[in-house]
Length: 282
Length: 334
Ligand SMILES: [Mg+2]
Image (cartoon, rainbow over all chains, first blue to last red; front, side):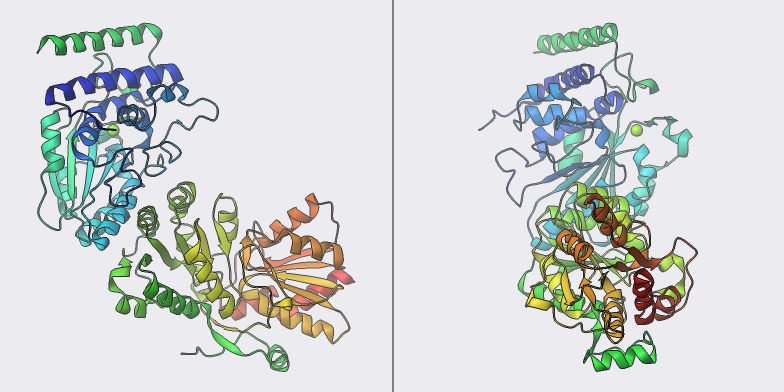
């Protein structure tokens, strides 16, 4: 199966559709991590449509790129993107969180296109260090990406892995922080501050880029521009939790809030308006 | 290199081992390291992953011979296991090697999620297990590992009793498609008598070492030698005690357990583990749910503050010796 290449303009539409479909899946299931899924949509869009060499066709290749979603709770967004990439029909996601559905509230390898079972925080980066080491030792050019929550960085295992990645010179590894500055209890800086994140990763020996996590061109540049040789890359993507739905943006209760029918209708209206604006921007 | 014979046995036990013609081998840990190196020379997917543990894991020669097949992560067991899972997901065969006390406790969540739940073919190697580090205190004892891992789906639990079982277990672990936990001590071990009937080593297969139906001792890991000696001591009193080595706590050889329960007058289970959650409780559950009633006890470490000293001292304290196990059998038959 070949897909026609997406223009940069088409990519903008994808983000709107992914947000709309993610929210529909969450409403259908009556559960989900709404805010964090919406904050990472643009990151996933750029990864899967511009950067990752991961397709249903190359899935069994040992030298494919790897993506591990360490912030596993934002799986609804990933399900929507993987369906769009052709890993399974879109309607499969309608079974989200239903009895015996593989489309559960965290990523599992039972779902096509998912690399590792995640959901407990602080696991993705160590796993990706192992994946990057495998590619490095085998001498092939696969790249390894993980998506971390900013609240997740309180888990000490991330910093064990950050040290090891620099020590082993894993320049094929990119850690993306969905820096939406909120976690379930409140603002990350109030819960247990991990700022300044850029200085922390730099001190651990990483090449750090901080970008607007909703600017598709900036994300693509950050993900594709190789850093210095032998140095792993950390992309701190400044994002807005609940991005794309006006009444959810930056509002804590949407961490795993499910919109009511009225709220969902409002959100659908905003997505329709965004798509109409995209259409008229031609 | 052969380690000095441990001061594990009483003079009587040592004399009994000599009468049985049992020779002293090396530490299972050394047999592990040599076997892994030999396998890794042939199969470059095999990797040793260490957390500042290559010395205690006897993996120095491995690192020198195959520098591209060893990964050092520093003193960071969570990272050790996560990295091993990532390597395994990308076609490698990692042996994550670290003291059992740490790798089955501090990194238990990584074992549970990254290896078992994701179902990648990684091998977790708990070295200096049980009370091998007896004098270092409970921080360094692993008397919980069978219990913790038995409650986690999808990992074989293997505690070899001697060098031959160790070599076979490492070979099977290297070929396994699913997660495996290997558990070794650091003291030199006696070579056990050959299995009755010459049954090959296999996961889920117990190995009968001595016949008998008056009683049975089902033992795993470094307690098996003491069960063999106890059976020989009991034979001198006319008590015929079966001894079964159970190298795989999971998969359990249920047939061997049920046969002991049906055919023998009493069953003792011996293990270098807390009395809770290990091989003993696995056997008890199987016997009870199979409606088999037999005099039964578990010779293990109690749910109490553990005494310290050498492994031999601690085994003596809790009766994991020829004399202690023989007395447990006599007690059940009285
Ligand atoms: Mg956050």
